[in-house]
Length: 179
Image (cartoon, rainbow, N blue to C red):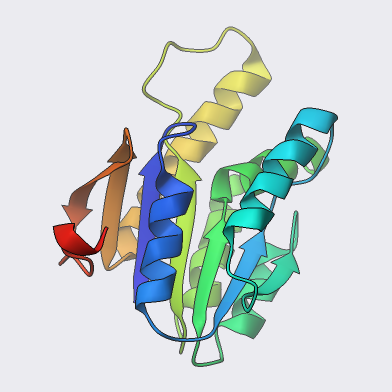
């Protein structure tokens, strides 16, 4: 099963994704895409690390997500990727002239034969004003395209606002009482 959890900053999407991962009752590998580029980001990363169960395996993967997903998806486990938007940001920073359509195709291809349950977390960044700068507009456009591509192949898609999930696609795996 592939699940996509979307939401804004501090919406509760990571917490909800972690609840879904626990509910699978399988071993969990957490794929972290963030890099500690400044003190504030280091604090965010530390906060997320403290929230995760100690028995979850961690893979730090700021760029090479596709190969990591292909490798990890061959195992009977749950994979939690947090977050696709930061991975996209890293890709845009390091490889701004690449074909993002090809990158997204490769990402989808890497999970097609998955034996694992995969939960993706991504920011919904297209709900605000259109950014002024070209690189910012490219980021928003590509994030929207990435979210659309994953939503097409995902079994379940949730939008999180104020800590509350709104199911956009599929059958719910958590009842209201379990959240």
